[in-house]
Image (cartoon, rainbow, N blue to C red; front, side, top):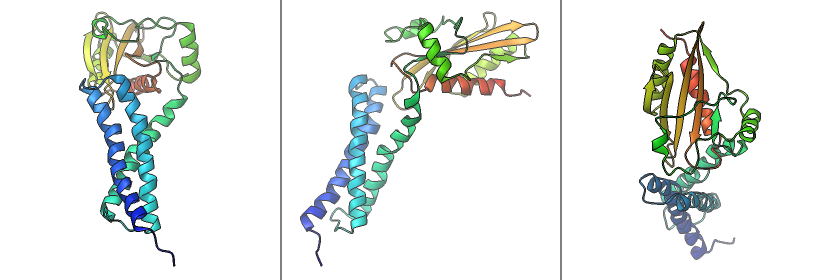
Amino acid sequence: VRTPMPGLSGGMAGWAVWLALAGGVLVVVAPVLHRVSVLPLGPALLAVPVGILISLVALLLSVTVLVGGRPMPAGRGRVLGAATFSALTGLVPILLVLPGLRAPAIHDITTDLDTPPRFDAVVPLRAGASNSLEHGGATVADAQREAYPDVETLVLSRPLAQVVEQAREVAVAMGWEVVAADAEAGRVEATDTTGWFGFKDDVVVRVRGTDGGSVVDVRSVSRVGVGDLGANAARIRAFLERLAAPTD
């Protein structure tokens, strides 16, 4: 019976542990360092796919060691930990990003493509942002219609002032930072900060009164990035769903 080579087996287990740690640091720590303004966006974005690749290699090595019954000088518990950790940092990010890869390369989504709601109070906060608040026009509108046909204006049988206040409350409940809420102007503006990299996306809610109630339009625009992996559309859907829910 052929026995495994101790040097190769032990080395593989050790590499699995160290690569799992290295991959985890790149995937988890790099975005955190960007959030606290220690690491620029470019290196942080580059670190994540590199970390995912390293984590997948660590996962492969860990599974090979565990399934192959190889000697484990690093300890079976450490190899199991490496397999679990590398699966979290290698597979979970891929599963999170995959659905958004089909999204078009646009970062400005609105329920009203003919007359998109305009920002006011948020404008000074976007100083230095790489993305403009000027809508991209027909090209962006066509891409949005094809990708998100369900992102539409909401009609409510509630008075304007009530809807503006409810819009503010929903924004707060969703964890957004409300910048302005003006019932007279029928506008709520807020900023949503994403969890992983801390990207800031700005939202404006426009409420217009009608004889039977109110018409609500929402626009969500990313400050950086060509595409948004579908984040802005998902944000608008979630907001309108909450706003449309029956009130007590």
